[in-house]
Image (cartoon, rainbow over all chains, first blue to last red):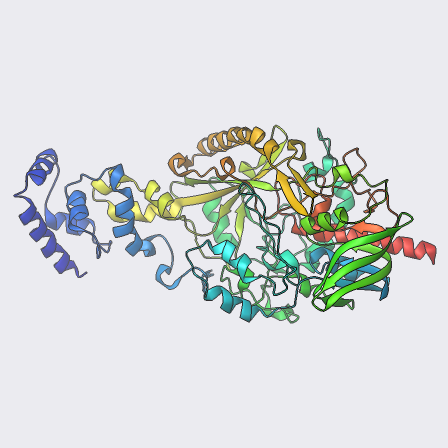
Length: 104
Length: 496
């Protein structure tokens, strides 16, 4: 997902969600910390959020992730960002030659 | 048909004895020769909903109807295969020596009949035969044919927590210069069916011995206390082979079966055959090593890191902890996520930190004293695992000790994702000890490798181990086979 598309969709999601009772509560609870979408986009610029659901994105944005969200965060965010902790991650698939690489 | 020395089984054990023996010999192997490309193709077309490893076993199914491995009980996860080369085909390549402590025989009723120093020269030769590639930090002074590239990265990453950690020796050909017809390891991580054929298999151990494939020895026939012929089943019907001496080097379960079916002499302790079967149990743990970036995949062979700081012995149970060199699975990584950092929008940092999550594989000894029994009665193999279940809770203390050690070293255990497989089942395909050797009252085979009560029946293979400790058995199988060949050669020389 392009950065500007992401930020736009985040604004859209926030805008539509803000009318909801749940988000009102979330917003109140998180009022002491920044909820600036631009700041959020800047802070997370190294992460690829393609595939993340609106629900999870809202939770992340409103700083309301809990232990219950671990699995979905893994599936929706970490999977697309394995390159952050595995060198050359996208070219490696288990069982294919080249699975292991030596780069020293 | 007659031969001086008949060897039953063309796996590592039989092949190694044959390669070093100075007598005329013939190997009979029940499995057929196979083409690894064809086996791989078979594997690729299988329905992948089943487990990866059991599918590998199925890919190696024999075409002979008489080659059906025994079905072991549900609480034993071990399996074996019956094709040419035997279990050397689905062996992972990790090549441990048993620990010196196991040969020291302290506090065990199942002593090895020789010391570590006695077997050490045979280990050295076995490592050459298996074409070991070893880490320079390996404390066992390996005789390696190639270095493991990428090892330095792993040393640097693990040094702050596990300064003694080293990459476990592997039987993979990592050097094109000395290939000798064997393939070159591309690090694919699926050694069992790799068309590169870089991992040493039994058929890479060269020799001039003739091999008859598709010949299953049903039983031995004894006459006046001496084994005189092997009664065989083949694709084309029954067959007998006479011999002066026979070496039973089939898979342990099958060696047990064929001896049980034989009219053994009265001096053979039949009641001890299979009586002290051993295997390994397993726990999978995970931990975070804060501040470390683990160089996953950056090594040129399928390997595991041995972590001496997390190995030891408790209550007569030896355990060995290996760090896996592939990233943890989804459940573990999800558990390792730092939710606080995510809520602080430090998302990239939180994901990067998953690179410090290490999976641990703990191999736990099942001591022979636990009395896990394998028997063959009324044409059926059965296993009594009561002793295992009565004792398995002892492993909990080992896991608690490992956790305590991890915390002491500054690592963070991820207890929520621990997998104590040992609570449900045991078995790592290391089916050993059913024909234990030694001087003690539990031994089935003497220190001279001769089946007790017989003059000309010898045993080779992992079935001999009186105590297997917590390490993979293959290298010891090869070392013991070299030792047996030397003993037989000495006898032949004396007679000449």
